[in-house]
Image (cartoon, rainbow, N blue to C red; front, side, top):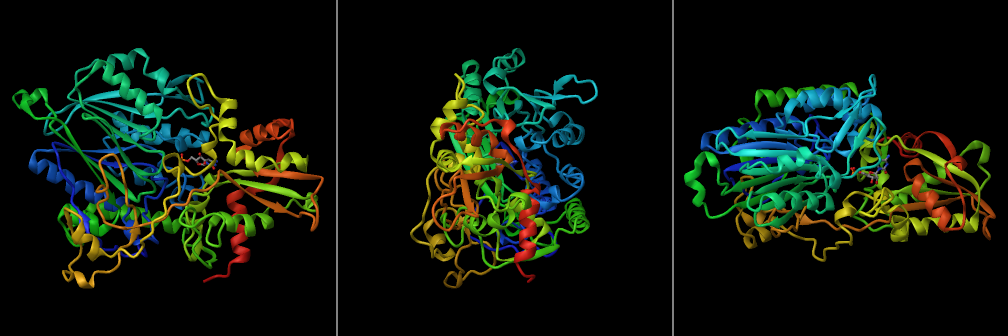
Length: 601
Ligand SMILES: Nc1ccn([C@@H]2O[C@H](COP(=O)(O)O)[C@@H](O)[C@H]2O)c(=O)n1
């Protein structure tokens, strides 16, 4: 873990269940390779993960099993370690490449900015050579203009110990918001291509499909159906991401998918047993394929537990060196520079919106009215609209640093506006953005499904998977009470007197297609309150009555939806009517507000 990171915390644990073939899976790490410095249960870092993978690979070798590492994209945007450098990612590429990842693919965040896509193509693709898969992604060479595959489309390989023949693919969901130096081919078109049709006619022992795709999204369903049409019996292991949740889906008794969360909070574990390899044909009598999964908290005590080591024996020299690389980068980037002190915790989904503790209520009530000011138009009444997806993480009470700035708001989005919109037209926009999903979706729908203006893209990614609030009645769970009631758990730490067990730390309590025992650590549950797609502040409104017209101010990211909503509300506006409201990214404006309004700790 990084110097100054919160000390790891003990919890009752569920062990890893090993199989013939085992996987460690990261996804949506979003630059959090330094770990969560403020959260004890997620404070291990990329260097610790390198040590962990080393020990698990050794165990696999010793026992004649196999272990593969998978990463399903969105490695960038969302943490100072990636975003605070100029150019972005100055330190990230060299830190990330230190892990031996066996199968890796691209996420949408690698593609929003042309410079990010170029970095991915020039650095990460060659760093991982033939392990990098791009089944439906092309890159446009800036010099020649030539369109080439981002990386190889698929790969065939055999595992080291069990000699399992694998055909692996690496997909991205049907993402449309990419910069113009990449081309994302729709999954449903890609699976009709000749190379894919040939690849699924191979007879491997196992198909592995990795993808920056939510495990319940149509894209995985389509790939599953295509493979099953050619292979009724071959097991398929899917690794997904994008929705930022822990989840697992059983497509059938031989096809299984996991999603391994977000932000380096989770290291996913999947094990597969009963694979009938051609190399050991006599084993074909195996009773059937079984898949197991665990969601490992990125908690050092848990990593010691799963590798059977302790704080002295766990760190490898390689792991320690990477911890040092991260610490040096964090220092050079001055990530601990403090803008001010957050007076209270501000939650995205742990508190209802609107409420005193909601980050969105704070933005709407305090930040937007102060920062959405254009000196030349400051007397004009205005509506300022922010999409909730623009905010990526909670703010914890205490120092708000350079790192926190990018953790909360990593994007380069700016404030645009349309001047002098009749108020009766403008005031209808927020309700349409939040409640007329079907109408907005229909306007951009294609004959094959949702179009690029799926209104869910305005909200936080977690809401792709969690569509209703989850409120837990009982919140006083203690380690002792759960330890007795749940099968297969072991206390972690050396305190054997259960009467002295502390209350459980709040965290994931995942329910997936295999049940409720997926998380490696037992947590007390956290509430999840759903949020609207957008929130809105009314600024400089008359004390009485309504303004005749307003300036309609919004983040540029949601411009296509705002223009569409305006049409439905009776206003015919297009891109030509939109101008920049104020210089500077929303991230800079928010950080500036904090500097002025929150005292130093
Ligand atoms: N400029 C941007 C870019 C993205 N968003 C939000 O992020 C969502 C995608 O996040 P993933 O980590 O799941 O890829 C997107 O749907 C937006 O909500 C944004 O607000 N501004």
